Structures are given as C-alpha cells and as structure tokens.
Amino acid sequence: MWLLPGALMVPELRTMQITVTGLFLALGFVLFRGTPPNQRPELHIDMVRRTVEMGVRDLTGGTVSVARYQLDELSDLAVLSTTVVATDLSGNRVITLDLESKTAATELRDFLMDMPPLSNPNNVFRDHNSIF
Image (cartoon, rainbow, N blue to C red; front, side):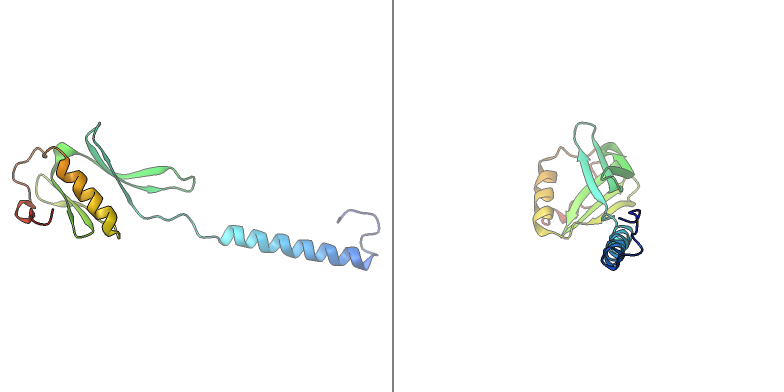
C-alpha cells in the first residue's frame, strides 16, 4: 500500500496508509508495554527425588529454580494458616511462602500429614500439631 504508484496523490489511499500505520504503532506499543508473566514463587515438592524447590516462571513459561533443598536438609516443613514454612537443621527458616488460598493450604497440609517424617525428630513446629 505504501509502495503503490501514485500512493501520495490519492487522498483515500493516503488516509488508509495513515490509519494502518497508526494501528501498527498502537499494536507495537501494546506488545512492548504488556505486563510480564507473574513472578510469584512456586513451591514444588518432589517425593521421588525427596526435594523441596522454589522457583519462578520465566518469559517462556519454564520454571527457574530459586532454591532447592533435600528433605534430609530440613528439620520441618509446615503449613501455618496459609503460609508454608520450612526450617533447616539449624532451625533457620529457609522457605516462607504465602499460598494466598485456604484451599491450597488445606490440601498441602493434608499432603504433609501423610508424608513420611523428616530426618530430624525434634521438629521446630512439633508444639503446633493442633494446627495440622
């Protein structure tokens, strides 16, 4: 349309060129100014490899690992209200993640109750068994 002979002489074609150019500029602006994918951390519990991993999604939708812990490195893994808390063998909190969903927290709490106990018998949250 921009390269047609006499394109500058025909007012209707000139109006179409300006309209299409404006639409392409608006589309380009929307594509470049769009919101990036959600960078909320995700929690992955792998019972086969016995790991707990936190990760975020990259632009392609794949998961990028932020932190990975073996279950033997953790003294406890608990769900307190809607927050997942994990502590290492020294008692330091290594994972604190708010699930923001009571349903997800309840399902994870039920899963953790069925999980075999962690290696350290002196779990930090042992006094809070009524929460589970």
